Image 1 (tube, rainbow, N blue to C red):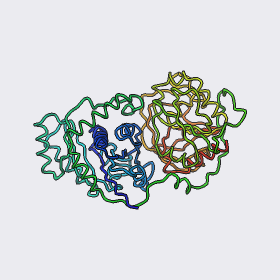
Image 2: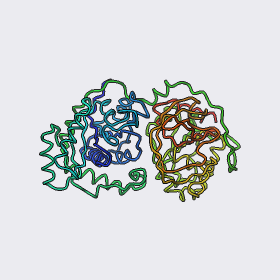
Image 3: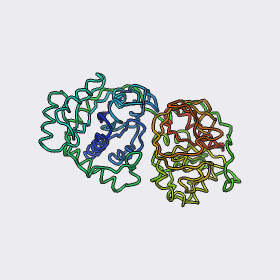
Image 4: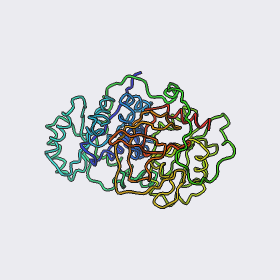
Length: 480
């Protein structure tokens, strides 16, 4: 199979240069021309893809070589970009920044090379003039396998400033494909973990994306950018397919439930099996809404391929789990922002606790871990885990190399996975009698909780790297 989708990688010398504004604006501007635009984000970030989805009307997808492995970058890209006229890939941090201590691994440069895609460098020109040529020359010549094919100048102060920048770059050999003036209306509010997610500010986010598109239309040569994208090299290989990878994953041996520490007084245990869907499939309920916005689209696709019916619910609004729920996935997000509202929804907290104490499989990552705790910043949560959670001044951030310590509904002990931590909270204790993961770096430790069917941890993982996780989880749904 040959992959020939036109594509661009939008990169920058450093964070804060305007990648998200330019990438999202380009997506929206091209979509408004009637093109089917496939949005992608390098790295583990969950928030930017939400803005990409608004701009394109398609699911934003991540391309992370650390979490998924380099061999999956092109197949995952092809899966997301299937049938599209153009793909725009927003980079992460600076062009050559990757996983700490791992060289180019997980960098925007590496992904650009794996996709054989031209790179457009977004440069914050607010405090420079002729020096911009030296900066661009350095980035363009650092790695000859990375094709820096154009520059978009951002935060340009005046027509005179633009003229000086263009004159300097004439000597660099890298064409200027856009020039954006300072524009406060495209700024998006940020919080301690980055931009505020779309789900928390839908109307304002729509306006912000519209402003980004208009600024890009005014300041960028869209025809030249599309021509550049069409010149991307062809890729060979098959697109990632959830059904195929689930079918080829090893049959999942079911775990022996691990009780771990004694749970606090459960509301009550179910006296009869939970209902199944008419065709024998189990419903897997996936938390969403403003408090739980962090998820990778491939997780739901893998669960569906494994035989589950995936149904979303909002813990801020829904007082019961979806009918027929046999398993629960609670991903990341910002429960600390909504702790009073989550706590006030007592019927749902009780329903979650009942499901968990009944032995159903529950996969909880980061925010999900906090929601299952006894309390979060003094607000009662579900009480599934006998832990207390609170906000912290310290940011915990980085990739993690981990191994499953305990058999669980997700993995057999000894299963190796890579993950990512990104939070300003602390749970006490940090691990249960049966920990979820042993983390190898940056320091050796155990963390998380395996308790009955519950697997709860701070670690965000990408199941495309281990599709057997989804198959095992759904099998546990059928037998619990």
